[in-house]
Image (cartoon, rainbow over all chains, first blue to last red; front, top):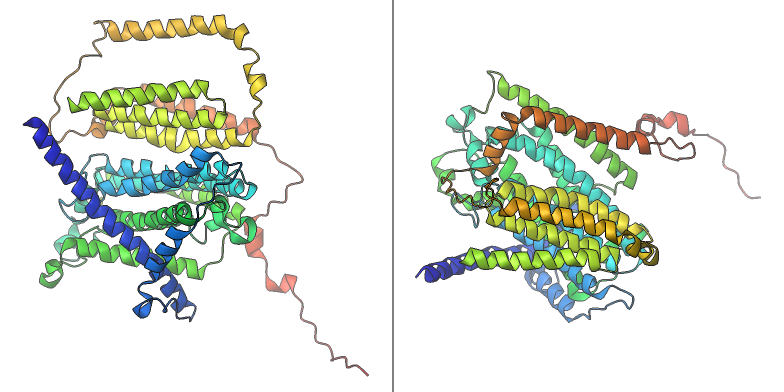
Length: 345
Length: 198
């Protein structure tokens, strides 16, 4: 009897995982198309428009192409690790979605230490890069991996400190509680919920978190890891076909994840910006999706706008600007919370 | 029942990974096996409902320490023959130290004096591991905690002071100077008549 209950429970969890992962893969596929379209428009081009109406079948064509390409194992590569690397890259990108609350009560694993869990999982992504760089037995790949390791470890610190501030004002590590907490306050009572969200009082932390997120996902302008002009494609240079596609998938999935986290931690997650009859009628998860869409488009906008950072400037920004800034802001918020003017009771 | 199965599976993986750490010929493989060992240890802690400790283990050791470790190990050209040289000479000492450690562990786990092995307290629903840990750490053990923090700070400063050197030949640029550069200081527009070929 107990076993049957456990089995049903497991089946529900598996169904939940499928319900998250399948739309996620579709989202990644269409994010690549949206990226090419948006950057095309920004640069006054049309973007892909040949495959299907408006180019809508382009991601599927790309996927089929990658599936049919041969996967080449370099002769002197460390075989097992070479195959393991893309998996190590994709695994944390997928696993972190377990604790993302899509709507009130709509979360796969409502765990107490959700924020810590996300922080821990996003820090594993670097293993895929390092292992890929080392196992490829190629100088370019190795250089890319070293750059990436240094960059990701540096920005993780700033990111972690920014999250500490969010944790301080929320008083909880549970992501659902963090969202719920943002719906309380003077402005929320007046119906202007969007002024109660964390982005306003924690604006510097939002900037630090988002920029660190761009650096953490190795996106432009922090993409020295795969800088074409210097090290060709960095850690991915020896990968082809589907094994390359896994890196690609992981990168885009991480982008969506950072967008989701930014929306949840700073922009009130599933909450409507203004509480009115019309806005409240929209299902909560659509609000989250809308916010994620805007933030993920910011990633693309940034890529189309800024030239690549120089490597020493990246390191300087992380260590000498962001980390001191976050440390000071932790103290400022800590003191603010002790005063009678504290917004977070 | 299910928990027991998961525990034994994790324990088996943990022991296997730990064995690989000391038997792997390639230091990078050994370091990666250590990562796996940390990971499974965190899994076992999660089974004990110590989620804060488990995730902190992952965050600190897997997420940061081992990355830097791998960073160094991959860059070094480790000579395996040199590493194996002193094996037989150091073996007796290692056996003694290992024996003492094993004895201490067994004594600790088997004895009833410490009472650590048999804690099956049921926790209430809204129980947050992190909150409880923070409460104890910042009230009951606040002095010990502060002393540990100061010791770590001293260690950080010492490590930086030992490795900091100012190189004369470095070509690092000061960003402030770069930003302060004005067009007038660098570029001069010269107006001159066009020279035509005769």
